[in-house]
Image 1 (cartoon, rainbow, N blue to C red):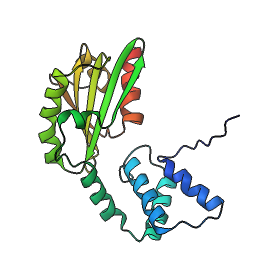
Image 2: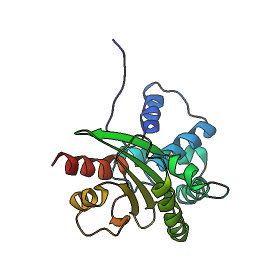
Image 3: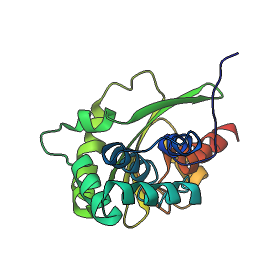
Image 4: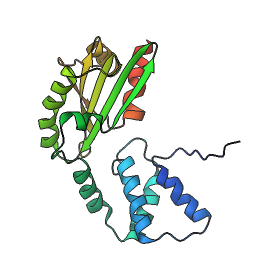
Length: 202
């Protein structure tokens, strides 16, 4: 049988860190920095609902080994990762895009996370225009989450037949023609997709 390890934590690097400890293997500063960065990225600096105390403890221990300040390192990392310089709306849209299916409905969800509110506000109309004029890529609906890490919220753009009605059913409230503000929503996997799937199945 195939051996695999599955644990309810927010980042695979947390599991790798635990395996280092279990096998009593010393973690060098460079590897510690890489694993800490992965945890900060996957948990949105501990703000994602997927984050657990195990993730936070691992990141703090790794940061100590790497000699980095978590807050400072995370901010630099997210600013670099969300930099939109020299990227087209298409490149931004598809850099983190996943497809899902339920009850014969196919939909795709893209996401970008940033610390810069103004940057996200300026990007939204460009992404909306791209989505409106793009090939739907074999999906009935497309969604894009512009996630503000500091405010722990997302502005979501959508296109497709019945997309507006689906979004309103899933999240409540009234959506505009092509977008809706989702306070508290930062995780595609844990907060966004399950509610959309639930609305489709109803």
